[in-house]
Every structure is written in structure tokens, then in C-alpha cells.
Image (cartoon, rainbow, N blue to C red; front, side):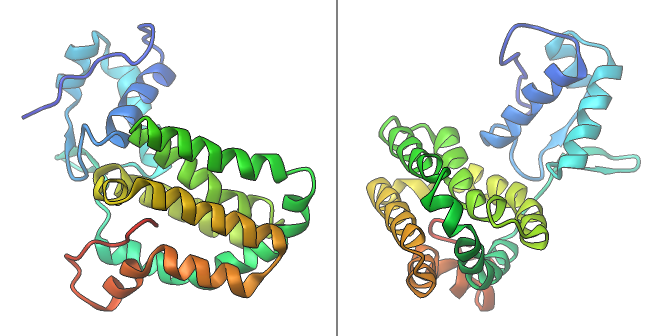
Length: 228
């Protein structure tokens, strides 16, 4: 059954406004991975022409949220458990290095930003706001790559983030088991990052997503990660 699309803000017929509306529907899990984005249906719901809609779909495709198939249409990208597990296995090796490279900035002018992401995560979890918690969660990890000053590391995260966001948007079990534990784990990661202890960061990170690393070599239908 097709989802009814509604404006997330004041109605606008611009491609950017349509893009934000569709993106929100994808990332909150309303349109699930593999779900089709039917142009006629969306245009009728939003009261728009096909032109801004197609521009919005192209932007979503460029972002990695949508894939288009000739003669079939546009679909939300699917992310497998194995794919996320493989991402986690690489992150375990490179994210501690990103944290090491970013340590000086994090202990200096960027320290408030790191601590604020943890606080944002805490508040979102207390409100049971899944989209906001996913956003804070990914912003936390992205900081290490952004502040590393290492272009290859930054490119790696840019290639992963959309897939991780899509996975988390539908795998709400990630947040339902023990929400407070997720916050505690990020507090520990922040603490060891600020101490500049790369080995301790790696150990905390391994504990952060052990199920993901196990799924890499196991059943591809298993949950990809406990927390990512």
C-alpha cells in the first residue's frame, strides 16, 4: 500500500522542498528500503507537477537514497545486514585512526561540539525521537572523520553514512533494547577520544557493534549491528 505523502513544512513547489519531504519519508522509515516512489502518486499527494519531482528524485539518487531502474521507476535503496557488517569491520580498523588524527582538535576548539552530540543523543533517546537520535549518533562518529584532516578517511565516511542511516531508520531494535546504554557507550568513546588513547578507543568501538562484526561472516539475515 502506497504511503500518502504530506508536506513537512510550508507547501512549496520547488525541487528543494519536494526533496526534503521525500527524504524525510525515506529516513523515518515511512517508505521502506525497496519501496517504490511512484511519480504519479507523489505528484497527486503533494499537488505538484512532475518537473520538480523528477529533480528531487535525481538529487536523492545522487545522495544514494534512491536508485532508478529503466521502465520500472525509482526505489528506495536497500542495505543488507552483510553490507553494514562489512562497513563495521572496516570502521573498526580506520575509525580509531580518525580519532587519533582528530584528537588535538577535539581537545581544543571542537571539544564542545563532540560533547554536544552526546547530549543531543541523550535528549533524543529520552524523548524516544528515533530520527533525531540517528542524526546525533551519526554526527558523533562523523566528527572523527571530518576533523581528521584526512581526505581518504572523509571519503570513506561519506560513502558509508547514507547506508548506515537507511539501516538505522528501519532497524529500530537498535534503540529499543537499552537506550541508556547507547548513550553510555558514546560517552565512553568520547572520553577515550579526548584522552587520545587509540587502543582504548578501538576496544570501546569493538564493544559498540560486536553483532555487526559477527554477522559479517555469519547469516546475512542476522541483525547487522547492535548500535553501529
